[in-house]
Length: 293
Image 1: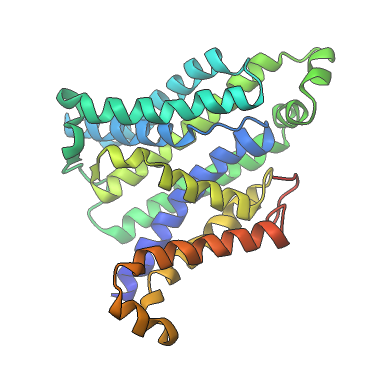
Image 2 (image 1 turned 135 degrees about the vertical axis):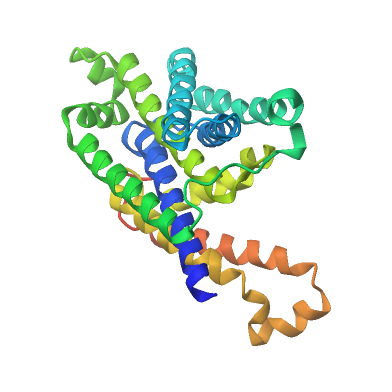
C-alpha cells in the first residue's frame, strides 16, 4: 500500500511540476500573469481523452493534445498580449468561465457534468507509467533550463523587466510574448494529457479555480523566474498537502474533529493557507525566487 501511495505521489508531483514550470515561463520569466493557464491544462486533458477514446494511439494523442493547447494559447495570446497589466489578467481569467461553460454545456462532445470516463491508460502498470512520466519530466526540465538561459529566454526576461526598453532596442515584444504563451500552454497541455491518462477520467471540475490556486501557491512558494524553484515549490507543498490529509489524526485535534467532522475539510484548507502565508511573509521571493511576487 505504501508502495502504491509513493507511486501516486511521485506521479502527481511530476505532472504538477511540469504545469508549474510552464506557468513560471509566462509569469516569472516573461511577466505575463496568465490567470487562465489551467484552461490549457484542461484543453490538453480533454483533447487527449477524446482522441484516445476515438481510437488514436497514445503516441499520437499526447503530442497532438499538447499542440492543440499550444495553438489555442497562441491564438488567444495574439488577441490579448497587447493588453497591459490588470486588463490582460482579467481577460485571461475570463477564459476559465468560458471553458467551464463550454465543458458543461457542449454535451455532444464532453458529456457535460458526466465527464469522459474510461480513458485508455498509456501503461497498465503504474510503476511503468511513473517511469515514463519521469522521462517526460526530465526532458521538460532540460528544455526549460536551456530555453531560459538562451537568447530567447533573456529576451523574455528583458520584456518582464522593461518592455519599452526592449522594444526600443529593436525586439519584437509582441512576437516574443506570443511565443512565451505558446510554449507555456504547450507544456500545460502536455501535463493535462499525462494527467488524464493516469486518472482515466476528465470532467469540467478540471477547470476549477481551486486547482489553479494550488498551482499558483506552488509557483509562489518555489519562487518566480527559477526552474529549481518550481521543482522545490511543488515538492514542498505537495508533501504538506499530503500530510494535511491526516490532520484529523493529530491528538489535539482528533477529539474536536471527531465531534464536528464537517470541520475536517475546512481545517485542512486553513492549515494549507497558513503555510502559504508563512512562506509569503518570511520568504517573499519563495525558496529560490529571483524576482518579487
